[in-house]
Image (cartoon, rainbow, N blue to C red):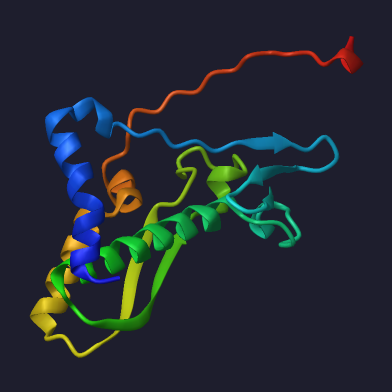
Length: 175
């Protein structure tokens, strides 16, 4: 794809969103089914299913996906797609590359061993390796713009309002 084709795709969307801002509000959704066999759940992804379970640091075997890894995977996916779109729009030749996200968390918090230890990732590091001949200043602008428009990165930097609810349902087998 080139910059002109990207502009052709995005121009009518941008115009509609400027004229009718409510049409820009977009929903995202994920769903998991809880296993009654294991400490696990099945997440329906775009083309398949992923079984997630306990990390080895909390008693898992390592055979199932870790939700922290999945969060980092979402971050590198978003950063990669955003970087490609920004590179095309800026006409920065990027032949390829890799994006890495690493995070740290303390299992003592998750296991309830120490109430002063936070539960969750407390340090996330995002890094890029790019195959490009662009000058360093251009690459720096590319990365800064990618960071600005990466939905997952900005969600992590500026956490959204979050709520949780529960509805009890009984299957015909449990009655």
